[in-house]
Length: 303
Ligand SMILES: [Mn+2]
Image (spheres, rainbow, N blue to C red):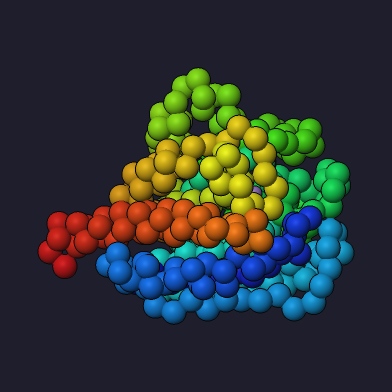
């Protein structure tokens, strides 16, 4: 299984735009070399850049154009039988990544959205106008058409095929939309009381029940900032790094796992480089599990 890393150097969707430097900083932290030494089949690491400068709602046309290109690139690699891994950038790139997969999958897409926030605003409900607060609404077919109708006019996700995990900061408008649609949200209180692994397994069962494949998008602000402070919008009391790393590894043994996205790494807040190492470790363990699953499946079918 060939893993195709894609950098999405976009920061225009966030208030703090410095996560645009995430892909290049990880590249300089020897991301690709480390994955190769772990036995992973990775090629090059092209980084898509956004041209032009804008912020808040004024950035919408720029972000829509960027995501259109990202979706095409992700879809092309996926249709070649490769496993796309998109590295952000702010979370507005999710509209591109998952439109690219949904348009190419040939069936419904399941998605696990690990995040401190809901990212389910529309232009009307957003209080800040920051576009990284809108990608999930767009993928569900709501809000700005430049984000919600990439490639096709169809909604990329059905509400019953998405679960959010780790949420602890949200506004009324986006919560109302998810509630009306019936999207399952695992807030931090439920995760604390029932246990992370139990909630994760339940979410995995839901997003694979009626889908042709599933993806994971990890917004690093889901992690507790005590352990992982290097993000655009930190929120206290998050998920534990080890639990998330082990959890992603366990889900990645499922051969239906078809793409991964990691966003919001802010290298300006990572002077020691420790957070970069943590991101690379999560990628290595998750992709290793996915590759092993592929090898096992090939052995089982004799191919
Ligand atoms: Mn997010």
